[in-house]
Structures are given as structure tokens and as C-alpha cells.
Length: 358
Ligand code: IPM
Ligand code: MG
Image (cartoon, rainbow, N blue to C red):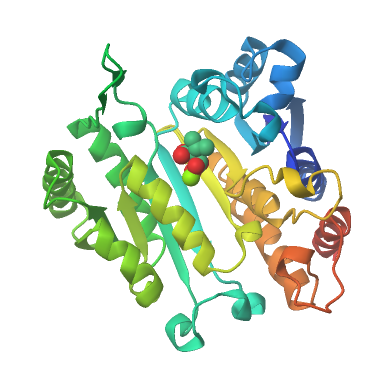
């Protein structure tokens, strides 16, 4: 298979962790006989410093022209003073999502068996383990609705629009994902208050009855869902939700696994094109020290192979390699216990590469 991957490492630890994921993708290409080209571009604060724009035209064009995008992270204190629309998060991340049409955000949160004691939840709550998937709508709702400040500055308004087609397409993603898992979707909303939530309920129920009757569907208010995630997380398989609720719940879900440095994500378009990134940020406090955990980015590369390239054997190989190095005790500082020997970013990457060679 011949593919081009746009590589936008971004800021902070971005270049360090993306570097390891690219090595893994090169190893996969070599081992399975693929031809991957990597088109590296600047994004975020790094691009602002070079070109005065967190998302230069050239970077956006490279992402649009590629078969998939691998992103590290953007932002940092150096660019915090930029006006809202110019900041790395808004200008780079939100614009990339919108411009590339990435409406479906998959955020799996699982506890790896070798890292079971990393979770802050009690073992009896974790039980057999934790493995859920947040399917977050990514290009609609209040983050993309109208934002206005009244002329006198004394009131403000953010609109939360959703249309039936927008709800249907993300619901399809969730139902399809559930079929590959435990066939259970929980649609999270605030239907006791919000009209958009009532529309979500109608559309999701109708779609399930018409096309996904084999998938179990229930509905939960978002405040209750926030509580159940720490009280009984194993009741969830796929959480389907709108943009802002998904933003909040996916951070919560990541923390109950105990290791945000382990969690990948995919942002997808209907045709399978996608942008892949670790769910953690640019971690400016540890940037340049070679201690960041590259596994979330390596697992994001595995998601890229699976979801955009349809290479499931290759994705399985990467995920198994990660499981194997963890089982053998490989730990970066974020997942090491105190006193345990920790590997550097490149040592962890090398361990995964060596495992892929076995
Ligand atoms: C995320 C981030 C972004 C979001 C921010 C940086 C705009 O929190 O990817 O979850 O809210 O989508
Ligand atoms: Mg977030």
C-alpha cells in the first residue's frame, strides 16, 4: 500500500513523541511491505513563530492532500497571550477539524492489564478492567455555533446548533463502533433542559430502531454520566455525545485509566480520512527532556493504520507490541511507580520497535 501521511508534530513534547510514532510507522511499512511517505509541516506555536500563523496555508494544504494526518500537540505558555482566534487551539486545532470535515472523534479509554494499579479508582470499581470508547461529535454544537458579545460588553451569547444529518452521521459512527465491541451505546445528553438534546434523543433512537436493532441503546443525562464514570465505569461500552459534553467526559474518562500518556484518539471524516493524535497536550513543563511517554502517539498511529488505511493486522501488531513491552515492565516516568527504573522517550520507542522485530 502506498500512502502519504502529513506529520504535524507541533509544540512542546510534540516533536519528541511524534518522532517515535513515525519510526514505528516506518517499521510497519518495512515489515508489511508498504510505502509510506511522511510530509512534515509546522503547526501551532512553532508555525506562529516561523510564519505568524498557527495554521499556515502550506500546512493545511499538506493535510488536505495527504491520506491521513498524524498530530503531536499544540500550544504552550509562550502563545497564551495571543488573541483567542489566533491561539494554537482555536486557529490550528479547531480549524483543522472543521476544514478537514473531521466530525467523529473516537477516544478510547482503557486500562492496560499491566497498568491496572495506575487507576485512581478502587480495584473493586475497576473490576475486570476498564475499556470504553467516547464517540464525540467534533465539528458542531456550541464550539462552532455563533459566539457574540453585546455592543455594551455586558452580556454574551454562545449558540449550540445541531441538525438531524449531523446527529445521524455521528450516531452511525457510534453504532458501528459498538458492533465491533460489546454492542452497547449510551447516548449522553441533557434532555431534561436542552432542545438540542431532545433532538439527539429522537434521532438516535429512530436510527437505532431502523438500522441497528442489534445494538443496545440507553440514554443518560450528562451530570449522571460524569458520576457513573467514577462510580461504575464498566457499565459503559460506547458513549455517544455532542461536542462539549464529549470534551469534558473524555478528559474524565482518561483520568480514570490513570495514565493520560497512554491514550490515543482519532478524528474522522465519513470517507475514513482522519487525523490522529494523543489526547494529552504539549506538556511544556517536560518538553525537550526526553521523558515524555510516546505510547499514546504510537497507539494513535495504530488507530491510523486501522481506521484510515484499513490495515488491521498492522494495527494489531503495534498494539500487541505496546502490550508486550508494558507486560515486560517498560515504563516511562509518568507510568512508573516510585523507585521503578524509567525509560526515556526514545528508549520506550526503541522497545516497541524491537518488539515489532521479534
Ligand atoms: C480537546 C481540547 C480542545 C477541544 C481544545 C484545545 C479546543 O480540549 O481536543 O479535547 O476542546 O476540543
Ligand atoms: Mg478537551
